[in-house]
Amino acid sequence: MDPISLFWEWSPESLEPPFVEVETGATVNREELKIRVRNFAGHLSRLGITRGTRVVLHLYNSIDAIVAHMATHYLGGISCFVDALVQPKSLGHYVRATDCGVILTHSDRRAVDEDALATTRVVSAAEIGGLSTTSAAGNCPPQPYAFAPDEPAYIYFTSGTTSTPKGVVLSVGNHANFVRICDRHWQPVEASSRHLAFVPFSHGFGTVFLVPLALRTGSQLFIMRAFHPQRVIDAVKRYGITHMYGVPSHYQQLLRMGPAAEVLKGLQMAFCAAAKLEHGLMLEWERQTGVMLCEGYGLIETCCGITWRVGKPSLGTGDMGPCPDRDLIEIGILDENDLLAPAGTIGQIAVRGPSVMKGYLDDPEGTGRVMIDGWFKTGDQGYVSTDNQLFMTGRIKDIINIAGIKVSPYEVEAVLDEHPAVLQSAVVPTSNPLYGEVVKAFVRLRPGFALTERELIRFASQKLINFQVPKSVEFVEAFPLTNMGKLDRKRLAQA
Image (cartoon, rainbow, N blue to C red; front, side, top):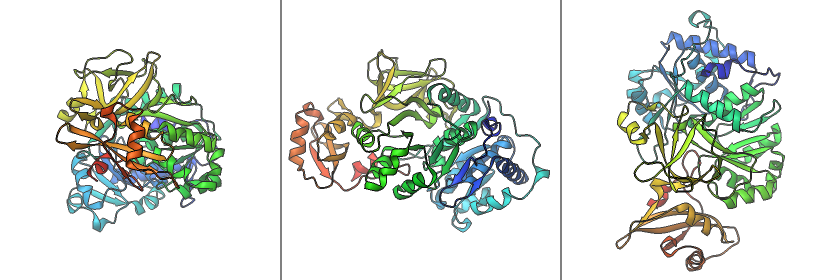
C-alpha cells in the first residue's frame, strides 16, 4: 500500500467534498482534486521533480497544501514538511538538510534566506492555486508513481525544542502499517463523519492520518490554518463537526469558553495526543460536554499513533490504552541497561516493527543513539501492565534527579492538580547545591480561588514522599507553549 493508493484509490464514493477550508469556505470535490493534483504534478515535473526528489512544504493547513503533497507523491517525490511558523530567514537550514529541488512557502520570497534562494527553486503558496488549475498534461505521467514498501515518501522535522530539528524519514511501508493499526484499533468512521483539523499538517497527524482518513471513508475534513477557540466553536456549530483532534491545551481553552462551549455536546468524539493529558482535565471535559476525551500515544518516529484509548474510560493520567496486536507493532520497556523489563516495571518505552522510521535524515549517529536491536527508544518513561495496557509516566529528559533519586513530574503534578484551587500545574527541576536538583512547581489557579505557596506545599506533603514535594511554588497566569500547543518545559525551567 503506497501513499498514492491511500489518497488516490479512495472508497466509497461520496457526493460531499472531502476537504473544506473553514476560513475561506473553499472546497474541492474528488474529481477536481485529481485534476488539480495532476496539473500541479505537471508543473513540478517541469521544475525537475521526479522519483526521490525532495520538496519542502512550508505551508499552512489548506487544500493547496494537500494538493502539493499529493502531487509530490504522484511523481515519486518526497514531501518534506516544515512548520508554517518557521521564520523565512530560517528556511535555509531545511533547504540544506533536505537538498530539496523545490520549496513551497507561504513566506514572501524577498524574506526567504538568501542561501535557500541560491540553491533551490521557490514557489510561493499563492501560486499553487493557479498552477493546479492550469493544465500541464504534457509534463505529467499518465499514472501516479508506484512506491516500493521501503521507499521514503515523507520527511517530518522534530520540534527542535532541545536541539536542532532532526528530519525523520518515513517510508510508504511505515505509513501502510500505521493504517493497519488504525483499521484494527480505531473506532469506525462513517461517511457522514465530519472531522476538524487545526493541528498543523507539518506535525504529521493531519497528513498521515486525517487527510487519508477522509478520502478512504468518504467523510469530510474541515481544515483550519491554526487553533483559535472561538473559531473552533463557530466551526463546530456551522459545519456540524462530529470528530475533533487536539492537544491538552486546546481542550483547556475550549472549556474556558463558557456557555459558547455548549455546542461541543454534539461531538461524537474528541481525541487528545502529543502531550500529557491530566486525568482532571479529562474528567472536567467529560463533565461539561458529556463526550469522552479519548487519547493515544505515538511519535513521528513511529509514524504517529501506535496505541489508542478510544471508547474506553481512562484509568488515570498516562493511560494510553491497550498495546496493539504484536503482529502489527511491538511495545517494550527497557531498563537502564537497554534490556527488556518485565510487565509492570517502569522504564523507557521502546517500539519495534514496521511503523518505525527508516532513520534520521543524514544522521547515522543520531539514529544509532535511539535504535538498539531494532527497538526505537522513544525517550518516554512508562510501563506495560500485566493486562497489556500502556501507561506513560513522563519524558526521561524531564525526570528530576534528586541526589540520585528519580522523580517523575507527572506524579507530582497529578497530586497538585487534586487541590480544588489548582487549575493546572507544571513541575520542573531547579538547581540545589546539596541535592543537585529539587522540585519546583508552577501553578495556575482557578478563577476566584486563592492559595498560598505554603498551603499548597502542605497539601502536597500529605500525599507525596518528602523528596517529591515541591520546594518552591510560583503562581502564573499562563504557561509557555510550543507551536503545537504543548507545554514548553524548557522555557518554563528557564523562567
